[in-house]
Length: 608
Image (cartoon, rainbow, N blue to C red; front, side):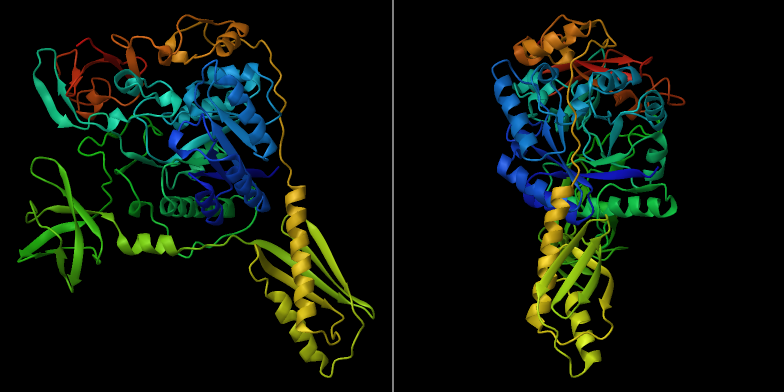
């Protein structure tokens, strides 16, 4: 059996979604008009339908995110949206709120959002049992943990391979809701994890001051597609519905090449979509927005994943300052270009930067040299030439076709077969005219049919019968080709096999018998769902208006102690810190608690 592998890219809007498909995505995910976990990245049903029509030409899928928790009053609108999304032709619906499962849903495959806290085989087995077609696994999982889940389930598994990381387990962060009344589970996170904090010990002694102590590096699992496939992942997801088209083009092209290389050496796998693409540039993840890269916990807790010095894009290291003159400086390595953005850390630890106004041979003239020092390590966080190339990139995805031209005494015909086995045939009635030069007439037909023009097709094989056809005007040949390919377009869309899945409520047992506010239950239908599966919800979601003071507002696998070489479990000769540790910002105090058995850190909001 041939196993399809899917590269799944973000679509902040239709234009970016089309760019993702053109640069190698087998599927894209896009926000619904409302109830999306990226509230500012919602799209109209009309726009989603346009993207679906384009995607299905390439057998690519479109998944729609409706993955926030909703109130009782919002459930009717959410249900209406699910039906509209299904009618538009979407291939799957990404959801978080279990209350939707108590409604009369259309037969659209359901995808369990990572917001559902999908971390254990027991949880994934339950989601499979109740009818989910796919589960998006937590970003924090290791290869070993993924393999265990795969061995105990058959549901499709999706995993993030690139992009920004939430410091918390998705769905288990209430920090933004607690301090700003902006819920991450409602799609309006204020990202307090990217703010600056001061860390103090039990005695109030400051350990670190004014650092981004909850900010993580960005995820990048380049080179690890074979490991993930072996672990059981078949959908490789790129984060970034708030990212621009340049980011999506670059990262999609990079991972598309990786998947193609893997398939080349492993013929038991294939791409989930159709067609081939040539990006027209050399993709490089280091040249688009990143805070430095990490493999997170894929191989366990072996690296420091925090980006505590800055939450901004650091970019690629380009060298050190070797000479400074009047209005200029030199560096020891990389080529710098006009318009580049360079940055460095000041003596106080603040990321500072400048734009390059002019480069004269090896002299670099910036718009400012304030605080720049000899020996300073420089990073390029804006590669002007590369980003301009991405803007201009108009990669076109092509589906391979074979053409068979036939001519008789009364008509001409063109039969076309694409790489997926779809066939179309166009005919035009025209009387046979003997050509003065049969060889020239044949070459004329071959030349015109070989020019597929502004279509999605790439000619791979062409045969002409008879070997020496009669004379035909160019307009007739072009019309025949155009009609055949337009008919093939229609057939590809019509024959696209969209999967359906009828959701049938059952009584499969939930792995826990009691759930608190961390279950994110904001409506009575969700409460009813858990009750039917043998679980009591003791407390509604924090978004229902509960007081967050004293509550656990974040659960994370990231550990500040490990980041500071103070982890007694994973750090040889760990330094000792007097606990409990606390984080403070300008307004609030947060107590840290460490569960070394589960290897997680909890954050509690303290009274002021």
